Length: 189
Image (cartoon, rainbow, N blue to C red; front, side, top):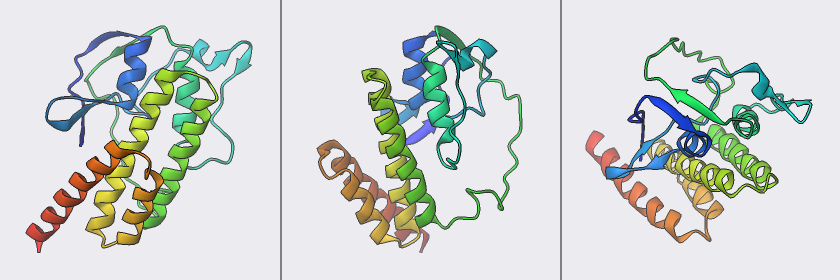
């Protein structure tokens, strides 16, 4: 499953923003997404307040803190705009919290963060948020399964599969993912 920005530029209502923030699988398993993160978004200041309380990034959380924040902010959104133009350049820092970790540690931290985000969203009693966050969690898990195979971390692959043992669709996608990742790995040898 690939992430892409094939979403047309324009104005979107709240339901579409939520849907595309977490991704929607389209033709040929391509996922259209605005990305579940804050670095590619611009917000009006009033969106950071709900019922007189200010919305903050969670203190002490290092992974998916932007997801926690974004879910709360999106609850205040009525509409938004998508623009394909790039307004900033990313500079990769190998010494960042993400850059210092081996694939197994990073996968565990990210997937634990997604599970916490799923739990947080479930507390909002919003089926749309819950469904789309769960789908983002599954896509992330499939990504780390591919990376686990690429790095010969088969214990990680088994661990991730176990997190979704009750999800038949995920297990089917996982089998496909593993087959493709192993075939790709053989091609590079």
